[in-house]
Length: 145
Image (cartoon, rainbow, N blue to C red; front, side, top):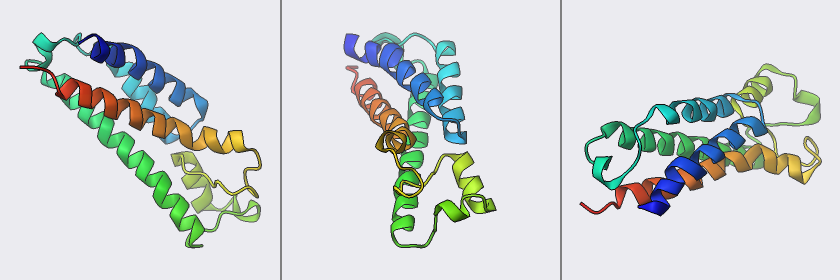
């Protein structure tokens, strides 16, 4: 119960807030909203896990949202590799590129983003939220009855 509580009240909020502030995008706004809702949820314990459906809905919604965000990164990168979406320094100002950048999907090409740390900053927050939310969900749903 202690490990689940630490993940639910410690690691999950920290991951959400850090992920929200590492870059500015619609996906980061989503992480910030999940972070802001977290203090309004009831305290986690094995006793109230089965009575508070809000906790289960919150964790499942966060896990689904993180899965969609990570899947979007993978699909976007595959589309870039197959040249279905062309992101070069010359066409970064067209409407499609601006929309994708504002959503949170940016090119990982060394031509567009030369620094490795900047490429990690674009992708790592969403995968970190996915990993922490998946672990928290598994821990919470494996509570003894």
